[in-house]
Image 1: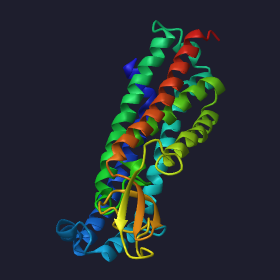
Image 2: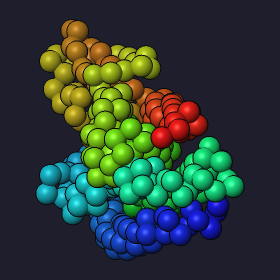
Image 3: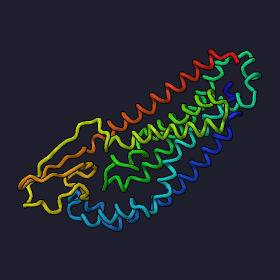
Image 4: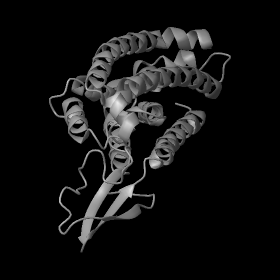
Length: 299
C-alpha cells in the first residue's frame, strides 16, 4: 500500500520538492539582501545599545522598505500565503475524487486490503509528506523574515501566517477539506476549488485573531507625556511600550498621560497555538468524516 500511495502521489511529491527549492532559492537570495541592509544601517548595534530608541527613523525606513506594497519581499509573501490553500487542495482532491471520477475504485477497493485501511494508509503517507514540506517551508520563511522580526511585531501578517506551526496546520486543513469534497463531489477539480474557497473562511478568522477577533486579554500601560502627547501613536516604531514586538492596538490620552492598549510580544506563541488548533480541528473532523463515509459507502 505504501508503494501504491507513492506511485499515485509522486507527482505531488515532486511538485512539492520543486516548489520548496524555488521558495528556498528566492528566500536565501532576498533574505541575504535584507540582512545586508540591516547591517549597513547599523540596526544591530543600535538595538543592542538602546533597544531601538536611538534609531527610530532608521527602523521606520527599514520596515517600510521591506513591508510596504511595493517591497521586494511582496512576491514571496503572496506566494507563501497561497501555498497552503492551493497545494493542500491539489494534494487532497485526487485522493478519493480521482478514484470515484474515473471508476478505478472498483479495482482499488476490491483487493485484499479493505477500503478503510486503504484510505488510512494513503492518508498517513500523504500527511507525512505535507508535514515535512510545511515544516521545511516554515523554517525557510522564519529565517527569511528574521531581520524584520527584530524591529517589528510578529503578531501581524505576514509574519504570523508564515512562522510557527500555523503554515503547516493550514496546509493540513486545506488537504482535509479537499479529501472530503473529493468523496462527496466525485470530481477532482470541483473538490479542489471547493476546498480552497472553504479554506479561506478559517484563514480569514485566523488573520483577525490579533485584530477584530481577540481571544486573549490585552495589556495596558500609562505613559507620562506632555499635553496632547505628541508622537505617541499606535503606529510608532519602535512601539511606545518600549519593547519591540509588542502590538499596539490603541492610544488614548488622559491629561498628561497616554493610556496604551497592546498585545505583548509573548502572546505570539499562544495565538499561534489557538490558530493551529482551529486548523487541526477542521482537518481532523473532515478526514474522520471521509473515513467514516467511505467505510459505510457500498457504491
